[in-house]
Length: 552
Image 1 (cartoon, one colour):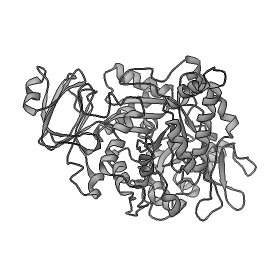
Image 2: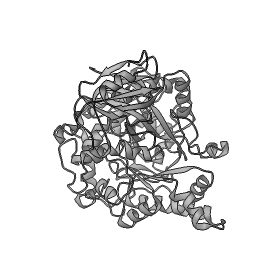
Image 3: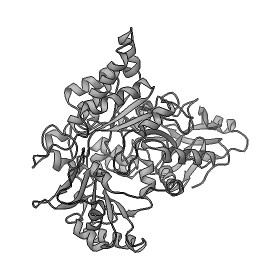
Image 4: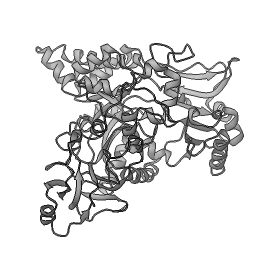
């Protein structure tokens, strides 16, 4: 990673992106002073306006984008996983490869210590996915916790089941499932809140900081300059502050505190409310957004709360809470000046998320003489969010529009996880899954995202998925919800900036905007759609500093 000594910079001879694909092919210049864009125009004039001593980058006629905004990711999880056994299908395509990887990790651990891995996806592996017996073979003397790519399910071995005290008589925890075979014996799969039964060790702040430095380099290489952290806790926010103080923060973060404990995510509801934290607190590099609640699981793991059973089964997934159990906390968040983001993948969960937001707004407004005005202040002006918003029904779409609620659409799933979605949902539901075309046609704000590390954070995979609706194996998920290249780029820039009320400062290359820039190796409007996923950043600038440099 290369960084400029100051926050001044000029990029000359670039084709400059504009929202909606309204760019000019005449190369222009962009001048940055103190981290802010001060001029966009004639390239020669840009050179003349360059602050003394500032670097001048000749773009060679390449395409210059605003820094890309990842509107839903998990940097803390990504940083932690960077230090754990990597069992993604690209690394361990067969169950035998998983065994070898876990075996190597166990050799470095003391006997009896937890061995943790992540990223397996049985739908993308050669042959069957790993089993409890595979993990027993790999590490018979260690408890093993192997998290699935969706982060809503984990596979453990016999030593782990024994350590957790799980027997045939152990009841499923509320909101979770200990998967069992026909004889009632645990298979090793722990779904949703059953993962919380594992007493996994907590990482230290220094461990997290080391992993976060790896994450920052990856974000910059992908052209990502802003990340919404959807599972923040004290450790994550502390890491951002330490990196910022040390002048090492090369990505802007927009933390959403994880409200209620789930698995290895600690809940921060009481601490956030008690400390009086409000949405918008912070600065241009780290700005608090609100509280995140989770209602259901994933489609790949068949734990999303769907109205109709998954294909070939009678399972309708898992809905974590009855509405009355969580409604008071959502209402308290709104009354405390906090925005809420509510994870809802299945259609039952999307409806419940909207019930919670609207119900909280009515409760906050109940004792106000101007109920309509109070409700508008609590709901329709706050840009609350439904995370993923995978399968909204028709009535849900109307409610999203009326409440000006953001549909934080994880369209990138269509690429990496699309095969499991097609298999588990069937074609009719795929035609309305992550419905970007419908969202845009209805005027619903819908930034696209990857939910990394569930899928790769590379935004070009998500842009490709938005445009082609094609999976990694080449299967076309549907031909209903495709959007244009221009609309897909907006979903990672101008639309994503709205998710933090920063559309007047982020997501555009214009005078007065924060200087986050990405120089691409090719123009996304000139390549075949099939090559969109292959676009890379040649130069990434965040806050006026060069944070990644390729061949330019």
